[in-house]
Length: 374
Image (cartoon, rainbow, N blue to C red; front, side):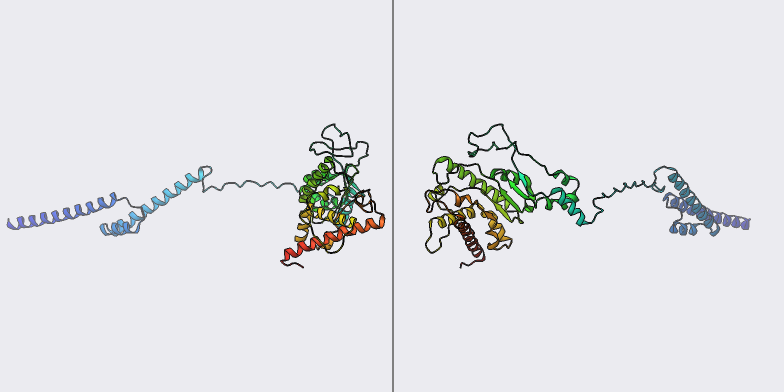
């Protein structure tokens, strides 16, 4: 009876230990599952292998890995089925190439032949620049222009030949190649006022100009008169000269600017001396003094052209020949001079004196720029 009771108590005690061990393992398993780690993690596999038999751990790990791979494949299928998903390749937009423009037959020619075509189209013996009438009004004395802004003198009886300037707008290449050829023409401008308006319209094309000749200046042919209207005319003319000089300063290729204005020397000598007055030693006759005074007026009014030319490195010997005054300054009748009228030889000497005096003025300007005086 005692043996039976002892054996029964031992079996009961072993059963309790077994139940306690199983409950402990079950709690550990529940705690592990509540953490919900990613399937296939190495540390979970190790933890499960500690609490389970080897064959159960291996089967559980294989089952979890198969479930994870199956979910990944299902997710990939759903993504691929969605249109526009990143996994699905987006068809590239087809690039439409613009049709190549056919090259003009003009540009297939050699540059020499193209330049010859431009010369035929644009080069004339003389290109006349006249102003159009703004108002239908003409001064009572058409040979004299009062100080005004909105009146233009226009001769409608002259036959006009227009240059095909619109050809320059064909394309940029034509404009770049033919522009310089067009402005190498011999331009015969109506007067100084027309020249100012024309230069303003030219803009940067002024740099290509070479030869400009003014036709005439509507004025009274009494250069020794001291009346107020001749003073007004000369003041207006010199004002226009200074405006034109500021625009012609960019004409780096300018070779000749011939003017037909006859200066009113009586008014000029009676007034204040120009800023560029340069006194030379030795006696001075009447006409030589007038020639030097004309040179000083030119130097003062066109100082912008001369200063820019010296800055470009042009010599005074070259610059003094650009501006040419009218021979009427020497051939017309001047009762205040002696002799009152010059012959051809004396007029040529007066012109040479203008050039020489301009050269000396430019030389003095150049020496001042270089920092010393002769």
